[in-house]
Image (cartoon, rainbow, N blue to C red):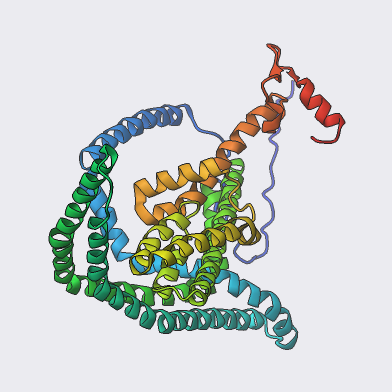
Length: 457
């Protein structure tokens, strides 16, 4: 039996490869995160972290309520420091429509003549911003030249003649002769008490308020100078905002998509667009409408030769910015001023302001504003009362568009739930005779059926 050596397979090594340039490793580029899913340890850690964050947030909320005054003071300080930036955002928002219109017509012309990339866009934007700033400064200068002398003259005449007018009014009331009936006695006592209260107010409260106003005049002047300085810086900030508005929009959109899911991000962007549409249409339209009403009021009062024409027109124009209540807020003190000078002209002014507000409410306002808010008169009143009660004059103006956005969100949520249940979304479909049975089937009333057949639906 032959002894053979065991066969051993020989493995040959691969031949040496020639030299190649250095290649990047697979992990040199940034790897994708979150593909393999969290491990069990990570899941337990996330659950514990959730509990910790909930408890920590509850404690922070509790201590925040205890230190609410200090926190509000911190926010007030931040608001004061950033006031020029806030002014800049407001100016940029108001001037943006002018810049957009100039870009719309000027950019195509410059794009054909300027071949360098981006040069036409920058030139068009610079011209638009310059035109908007110049228009704003010209408007402010013109208004100051027209209003300040007239306002000074009106207020000076008011201060000089008001005491005499009030005394004459008191004398006329005290000289009214009535018979000796019980009603006449009550009227006499009421007029006597009223005149005494008016005289006491003139001698004590009015003089005290005047002295307080004079003592605070220096502080008021310093505050006005500070606000003007903040407004000038804000105008400069608005130039940078208008130049880079597309960049800011893209960055904000990028952050929204990064933080939220796609569905929630699209919802946030939709609400942002809708809010901009409501606020822009309401604020800019209301400013134009109030300016026209102020001019018409001044022209009408000048034709009727009424006193304090410029002062009253400014009051009526400024208060007209407030929806619904604005005309009455401006008309009441204006009527009192004119009646003190001439009672008959005060009556004429009431008739004139009623005609003017009817023109504004039925013709001019709908033409300019349209249905920018989508609110009924009832909700407008609620928004004004709520906003004015919480934030004063600014709340009365901004309360309506803010409430309109909230109303739109609620309406969208309600309609979404109705659509999921295959129910109609129109409010007209839910009269007293329409109903939904226990199985979720909607039944229309006979009135709605008749209206739909007759083409009224």
